[in-house]
Image (cartoon, rainbow, N blue to C red; front, top):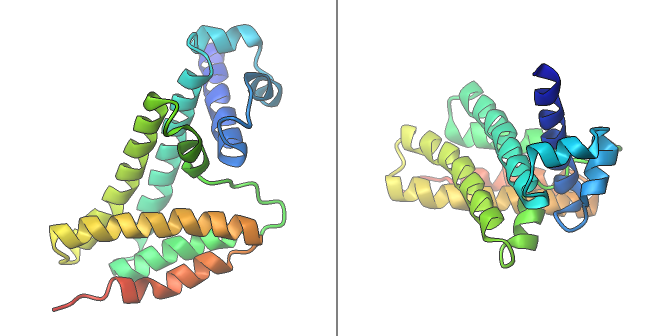
Length: 191
């Protein structure tokens, strides 16, 4: 039983990594099998509906990893401005590693499939909303209004997603560092 569960988890983890780096259409089932070392029969045993079903599980896996990372940083720093800055700066450090293959958590797969695969679009939308809810909760706790918290969380998430893409293309964490430096301006309360 443990071996089967491990094969399923390995397929999900491998798909998650490859989709983040190469997108949905840049990854075939053969790529996932080759990278994971899992037999083809196991893939169809666990994911009888194929690539789309595996992609949904991979997105959910990525969602959970990102939630864990965001929450850890938000819990570590009390001030919401400093916490969000620290989270973004932590992301920027990834791009100082020469062999970085982070990819965009779900941005690439969301952009590729939003008009062609409704189940994947829905799970991507849900992931974005989950991440935004973490920022929103932190802002609410700091006294921002519900409306401000919700709107600012959308902006923060969009800045981070865009900053990751920009950092990838510039092969530098500088775009994310600039975004982090502007968070105090964005989150300035109008009393």
